Length: 142
Image (cartoon, rainbow, N blue to C red; front, side, top):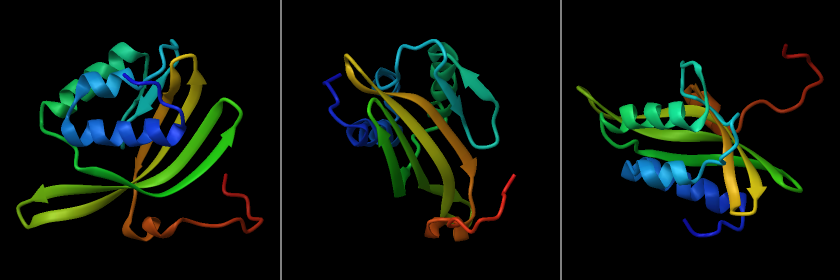
């Protein structure tokens, strides 16, 4: 795995690995920290690279994920980057190909090996989520 000089490069590699069903490439993007975590849409929190690897192996066993990042927002603070985005996922159904939306947060850390993922959290989204979401209004959300 080449040295990734930005969190954007790491993110691009992550989505390319999903699209190609490349488990080795995908897992090489994760940090070797014990507490890395992944939450698939509607799923449980998976902690550690072994269980994350197993989950993606199961997913790739059903085929690649035609998933593309959109509406990416970034906060980069020194050695930590937080990306929030909408994933556009193409799903084949009996009625043809449908476009679904998933809301995701990806967190990256800068390591001696370059930028690596420490969290991927994806939640089911809706079509109206694809426009960038709510903006600050002063209201408490939770």
